[in-house]
Image 1 (tube, rainbow, N blue to C red):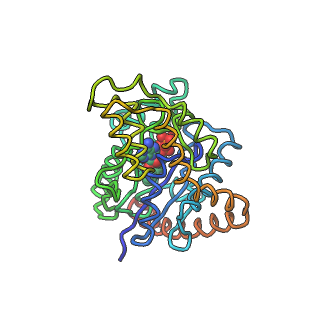
Image 2: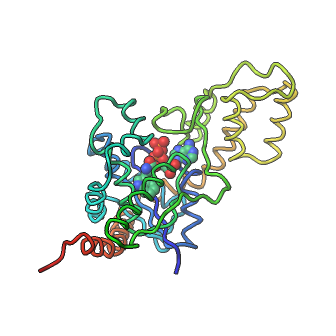
Image 3: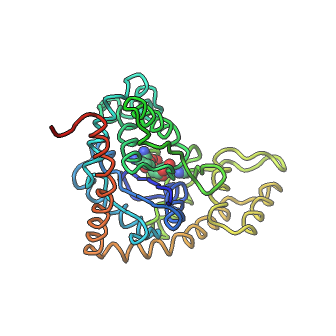
Amino acid sequence: MKETVVSGIRPTGKLHLGNYFGAVTNFVKMQYDYNCYFFIADLHSLTTHPTPQDLHGYVRHVLVEYLACGINPEETTIYIQSDVPEVAELYLYLNMNAYMGELERSTSFKDKVRSQPDNVNAGLLTYPTLMAADILIHRATKVPVGKDQEQHLEMTRTFGNRFNRLYNTDLFPESFAFSYSENLVKIPGLDGKGKMSKSNGENTCIYLSDSPEDIRKKVSRAVTDGGPTEENQQKPEAVQNLFDLMKIVSSADTISHFEDQYNKMAIRYGDFKKQLAEDMIIANAPIREKIEEISKDTLYLRQVAKHGALKARESAQKTIKEVRQLIGFKPF
Ligand code: ADP
Ligand code: TRP
């Protein structure tokens, strides 16, 4: 029997290179070796109160982009989280055994309290139990995500094990973050600090759907410094970040050329950025073309979502049936 894999991305914007290299490339590789469920976490996005138009538009974008990146709906179950109400039901049960203290200690909750102090809603506090429900509903063991999600997976194991202990069962297996690369990847942004993330601002991100012009413009504005002042000096974070991005999209020759130039204090950031932008454009081109093509085919998108929802519900209903029995919800 193939191991089960679950992962999802919140539809809060279009997918960027961080999402792609941190998560989606692993989805694409895993689909042939595992029993995979990849979904669009629209319930999770409600924690930030999107308008109905934004929510609907981004769900569509992410679905198109999943397909454009090569997730194959024949091999994998692709679905929209809100199409599977069993997830919300399991979330409710898990919340009964999740404690305020542990939820308040989650790093992502603390970050949100800082970033949206006027909207500290209960959904934000219980974000990790909803995520645990996503994973436990299919009894997955592997979860391809970026490094920032490790704490949520630790909490998923805690909630699953706690349920097992409480109800004297081994229903829920433990799940772990997974990546084909040795370490979980962290793709830097263009703002000179931190990771590529929608929440760090639009200009830190290169989107899969960005046009060549968008890419050139954003990369040309990327933060650098005044240039090296000593031979072979260590690079400041902003410059290192651009080199890290280059490692993802450029050839080994190009990278070593610019490394040499930097070490000899001969680097011209203008040329360096131009090369980086052109290599990003080449890497992005096939996906961008597919995004445009698939985006036009609403009928196909509707079929994929419908088929995915059926398959996901079939798996989810099996788990919920057992959970209800274990909890004591039984017919007389
Ligand atoms: P954002 O930070 O733009 O809001 P999300 O938090 O929605 O992105 O991330 C969706 C998925 O993409 C997660 O699995 C996350 O770990 C991964 N991811 C996001 N940004 C990066 C990044 N810069 N590097 C690696 N993985 C990332
Ligand atoms: N929390 C994840 C993120 O911000 C999205 C997510 C929701 C998820 N449920 C999940 C990822 C279940 C993996 C498995 O990126």
